[in-house]
Image 1 (tube, one colour):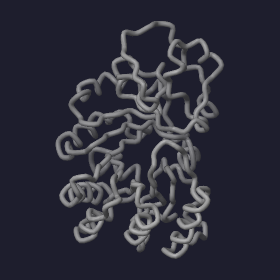
Image 2 (cartoon, helix red, strand yellow; image 1 turned 180 degrees about the vertical axis):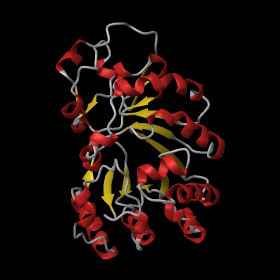
Image 3 (tube, one colour; image 1 turned 30 degrees about the horizontal axis):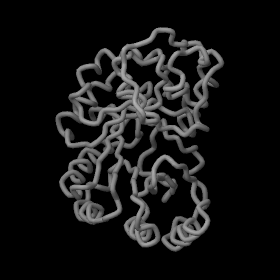
Image 4 (cartoon, helix red, strand yellow; image 1 turned 30 degrees about the vertical axis):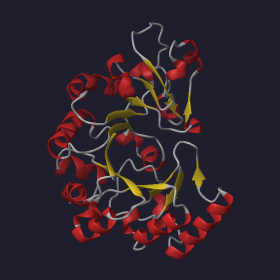
Amino acid sequence: MAVIPLWNKCNSNCIMCTNPSQFKDDDIDFSYKNIKDRLTRHRKTKNEFIEDDAHDKFYLTGGEPTMNPDLIKIIKEIYKQFPGKSVSLLTNGRSFIYEEYVKKIGKLSNLDEIIIPLHGHNRQSHDAITRSPGSFDQTFRGLSNIFKYKRKEQKIEIRIVISKFNYESIDKILMLIKKYFYMADSVPVIFMEFEGQAEENYSIIGLRYSEFRSQFVKLEKFLGEVSGLRFYHFPLCVVPEKFWPYLWRTLPEYEVFFDEKCNKCKYKDYCLGIHKHYDEIYGVSEFKPISKIFNIKKSKNFYKPFN
């Protein structure tokens, strides 16, 4: 997977954004010509963009990539230079309120996945995180439009990033998705990464795994009920065993670590690990080696350790 930032500005101002606050002020050339030249270099060298072996695709991000006026041209250029690679687009979905724009997005043959975060179950909760009044209404309408105009093959992911601001209402967000956007292909519940503004604002937005653990009881009713429900960035010892089949390993190896006591855990080889900055903020006292053997089926899928 090659990660391509396409814009450093954003029409939202999420308090737990993983980009540093100064990123939006950097003088970066995101023109079609520059991106095209970089794609050409990447095709020849494979080292123009950050890349790992997780997926054979391009991952377009920002800032907010839909603010780039050449986004559609860039996606078409990727198809010309890399016809065998698919494209995933991470967007806040607000630009999708414009139906003619969404129709064009839906026709892009190599755009196989669109990822849109939903931070709250209503205007108040969502907009408090984005710090952008009206963003909930625009994202909601944008999601409605993309489901209306997408190609059948295009997959839609609706993300929920857990933070201090919304962790007690994750069940309400899932209920909203179940009611209005049940067609989503995947719905990952993601424990926040302490990077960029999320790290800068940790005293306001930060959350311990131990604080979230009590919420799993409220989420049991969604297992098997919300299509594509997943959980990202959760070490096994902080998650009830019932949820293990829904855990996915998504962070690259260099972004996670294991404490020395983890060597005593019966399931270390299947654990997703601890995000690299978490211990700097909260320490590791809440992580305990698992000594019990559970009656759970292990998978051969590195990214989804349990069936």
